Image 1 (cartoon, rainbow, N blue to C red):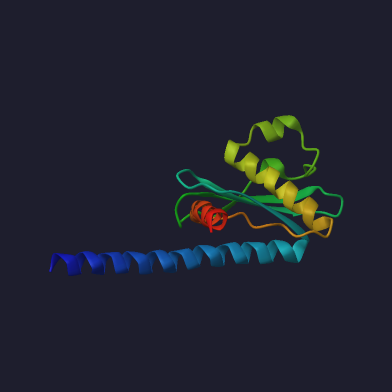
Image 2: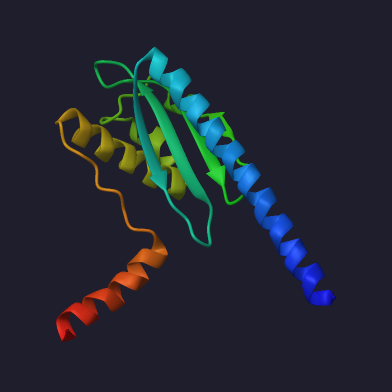
Length: 149
């Protein structure tokens, strides 16, 4: 009986996480769509496994200046986008050092990623999706099998 209760609790937890995760993705899509209607959007991310993750969306004008910046930061599905007023009216690539230095390390990493993605896309390239942590681990075993095979 205890096993059935535990399995039921896990199933309910999984379902709840799925619904709330869908809600978070919907929030991301709505924010992206709203920004995209105003102009070009640069997106950067700093993934965290055991630490906070950051998604940074930057509305950029034709000259490469940031019009508006929004950040979603957190480890939970309850994270929502919040505006970062300090980045507004800053040039994407030649930002004032004091402004950039005030950002936390995760937001800085997401900013660098947004710059990279923006450069690649503007040059007509395609950004490679990084492997998920589990895929990285599994690829080690796949490579060993290919070498030994």
